[in-house]
Length: 144
View 1 (tube, rainbow, N blue to C red):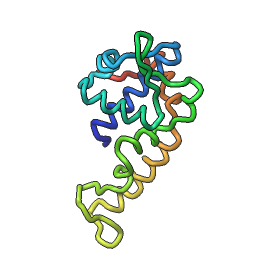
View 2: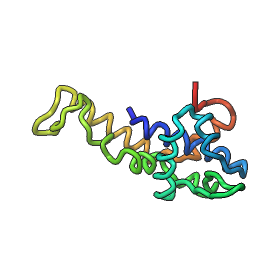
View 3: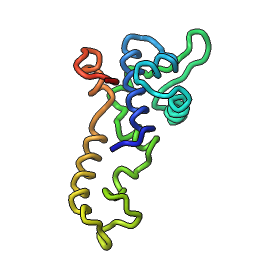
View 4: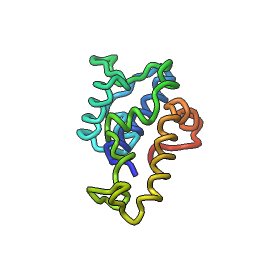
């Protein structure tokens, strides 16, 4: 459903959020190990998230990535998706056709209209905080 970039971005943000609630910053190496992602690719994703002010990056021996715990309830999944994937998840064709719309629909167009609408609602209403508690409790996981 999401691109690999977006999957890793969401996972990394969630891991950083958990550690930020423990008042800890995390290194790129820690993130890569915890979400099972390629280091160079993850570094580029984290740069994008930092540039868009979703996460914070600090250099030096006490450096690392973090999130302001106060922001966890206001950062929505839709913000991460927008930074990393744009709006293609809401507008793209379910069958990958370049021109799929009301005037020239693919066979799945009408079904996907509803799914995309529900997905958009879920992403816009789900905060990082909404997902962090289950991670902290060990109910959900970032890697298998």
